[in-house]
Image (cartoon, rainbow, N blue to C red; front, side):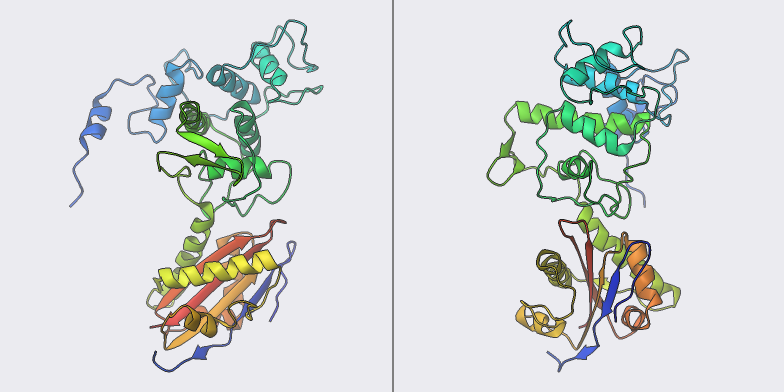
Length: 372
């Protein structure tokens, strides 16, 4: 039963229920204790602050500075001019020849950020246009672009990372690239918040991770595989700090369990086998462009379970198309009687989630419920 959601069209389908025959706090680590005793540079950034290490690193390199009163103000928003200085200092941007004069009317030679903006513009990090807007707050999408350009990171189209609020567009490739490399982990719910501003502490963290990536690449520990179009860490360490797409599924399960718990129903156990099946179904719908419980490869959900040797006494499936967040898909499922019945069925014990996106940025969601 298809449903439409405005302003972004989305669809939901619920599978009919199918039954089958029975087939004390830890002590502080030594390193953390030493850090807590260490002398720190700023009165408002203690060793326990989440971005302490990155802020100390960038200030020691001269890329970020504090204020005369001894404070850093980590939650202050970063301007475009300040971002230019940080990246110029970290990447040692090629000095522009004296003959190169940027077109910016709002960053002239007497502006404090002129040398940084000029060099990065010469290197192609910034577009050479009439206005630079130096005092404008740097957005998260702009941050992704200038980090990728400044560190000369290859942008590929694999979309191994996905953020539900970053559809195809000018910044899509930059954002997914820094997600793939672990330079960003995004916001909760696999969002990136592309239009949101960047704080000084956040930019220190992004820049520090980009610098670490660059150092490993320069040393040969990270190489770019041109055939597969991705970076490979030869040391065996995972590049990404987390997979945003996996976060989507896990958060949707959390939200479904909250709905059950609000009605005094036992929480469903996340089942890795159901996760795998749900993910395969979501990816197939995204790749083949269909939206149905009847998979051309796996059949209906009970047939898919049999194909993979998954035993159950009851099984059901919820699917959805083009919802932009775990909260939205859960709300839409709960507003639909058939989907809500699956979510709140007291007989189910296990659940698995899948999430995928196609090349147009359309999202596909799958939940498979089972009673073992």
